[in-house]
Each structure stands twice: as structure tokens, then as C-alpha cells.
Image (tube, rainbow, N blue to C red):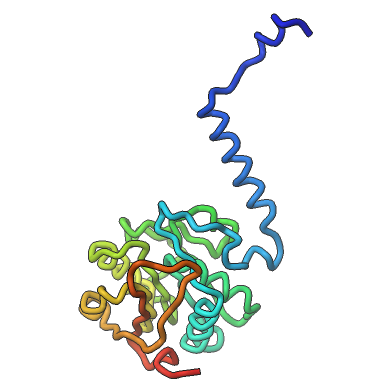
Length: 214
């Protein structure tokens, strides 16, 4: 092939090449997520631009166990912006519960029909198959530590739940959470895989195992 032939081959710009590489990386990640491995916490990496911080294995297990107990046999659980709890629930292989993940990040669409695209800015923009008050318990972790985010997420929570609420957010939101959702702070202190700058706590509106030592 001559030099002139080389010149005729289209060349990608650096921006286009970077975008293509990112696309292939995402495709590879999705193809790697198969079987039980796809429920491992951390298999989908945190995106700090989306304010994502995954729970530690111990915390995710404690919250998942609490959710199963609160939902009861054949219960329905909604995980709103709390993907690591969803992943742990599915890793427990509990076939007697129904679980949905409500999440803005479309990488979690690998979970098929259990994935519901969710943008807290449009708190009630949900598909028809998600009926009002159709979940025994809602576990929610608003992505941003702000009154606006908590207020909008609270609209979603109250739409979804039959009554029980398990909220995970900063300690500074205690008063606002009580006002919006009638929840109280638990003794259990959740941990993340990375250290956060703000103290993080759990809140419930029912008699919870998170207030008892195990």
C-alpha cells in the first residue's frame, strides 16, 4: 500500500477515539457481568460525578437482612438509589421476595426488568407497572445531601411504600427526614467502602432490628 493510500484512510479525532474507547470499555464491563458475579458490590464501579458511594459488604448485608425481615415472606422491596442493597438482596438468592432497583445510572439496566430508570428531579415519573403503595418496604439513599433532594426523593418513597421506610442519609438531615417521612434515627451506623466526609445514619418509621445489637 502506498503512502497516498494511507492518507485516504479516515482518521478519528482524539475526542471521537476517546468516546469509542469508553464505549468498548462499557461493553466489555457489561459482557463480563454474568451469573452470580453481576450481583457483587463493586462490580459496577462508583461514579463520583453521580455521587455514588457503595456500602461495605457488612452494611449491605445488614440492610438487606433488615429489608427481608421487614417485608416478610413474599414481600416486595424497592431500593431507591441504593444499588448495593439491591445487589446484596439478589446475592442472598431469596426467591420468595420481589426486588426492584430505582436508579438514574443506566449501567444498572443489566438487571433487566427489575431495573427502573429513576431521576429524583421527576419523583413520580415511573412506569405504569409500578403501582402506588405496592412495596412492603422502601430503602432509599438520596444521592445528594440537600433538603431539595431529600424532599423530592420523599415523594417517591411515599408513592411506593405501603408504610415501612428505611432511609439512609447524613446525620445532618435528621430533622428534615423526621418532618418529611416521620422517621427516627437508628442505633446502627452504616459504613461505606470509602470514608465519607459527612456522618451517615439510618432512619426508620417502624420497630426495626437496626435498633438492636446483633
